[in-house]
Length: 539
Image (cartoon, rainbow, N blue to C red; front, side):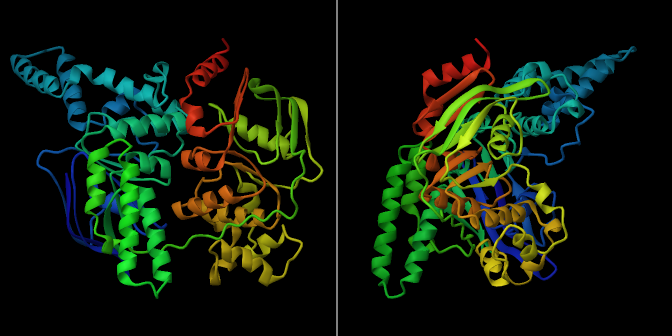
């Protein structure tokens, strides 16, 4: 349990939020949302004691233990993977180290024996004899194979370190668990594992994430940071988003009578409650939604970018034909003898346990890389817009954003270019920023503006939600659902795939799986799961 009393924070004259009085209780998971800069990570740092609030206090239940996902990927470089995870339970780790030190003494005394006995009792009370097997199970669930459990952290790849630090945060069943962007650098299978783990976690969880499906799967409550305050809602992100959009539409219809508005909101809550009743943690969520005060629902102050793709011409029947494509990296095969045709109306997600496979394919069909073997052919009516995984090469310049965008446009008038930048929420002095100093999210919005100008009928998107905030992701998602052309993409965002794509092509070193079906059905189909195991393991 975590309790905040009159909590507030400001930096200089800038107030992030104030007068926060909340109680976070066991058995609930609180998804924290808010625009970039609203204070999501700041709140987490205050709750964990890493940052002192300007006003108010934060307290835990007596004797409770808090665990926080570490953002320092180098703090444990001199420890093994296993020892890093074990340090997630600080008290247990200290007992283990003291116990080992006593037993290692060459002159073991009677006092040492008494102390060792005390430590053994504490060790047993904390289930210490199962500590390593519990840690190993967490690591395996997060995709870290047993052969790496005794490897030094400094020798682990950056993406693997993220998973180890997540295992460290989860280890030892903490009373209060704080996770800031826990799905970063996790593949879809590992995210699913984490969803299931947290959905069954019996203590208190607070999570910041840009992954909507993840938030929906785990959250019993949504904590919205907006209007310089923090509002707690029963229900998950989708409930908050849909109710906020409904409130916005009602606000825009000023002549609608108050009672009609209230009835509309109540009907919405009733329908949403029925849907929630079919999911995990069923009864409690439904009851919370039914108790929700409709007067509390208000439109969000957030701004959503205007992502609009308008094909200049309709695609013909021939979109893309791929014949015998093979690609490798340093002798390691990513895919080989790849054959498929893209049909009109296809919105395809490309999947692989090795994300380099999708990037290689997209680079090949965009002429940025040569295949080891094979060829491909676009239809004559096809125009493409490509969003690469790594966009850094586009921003090694001191051009301002208007001049930067002009490089990619036939119409270089300032009004025209500012129109596209404005759609992507760059306005006023923002358009005079140097391209080289942009944040990751700002660079992505510039790349999307560049894509929109092409008026392409086929979009190629390599992990399009990277660095984007929830508002941009939601806008991008809505646009792709309505897009009349073809989409070829790779993504770790479950909701993005589920709502946009109608076809899956999974790339393995030993062949492909190509299915025209719903993504949720694809990942749960036992025949497909068996097929994947055979292809990846070359059976």
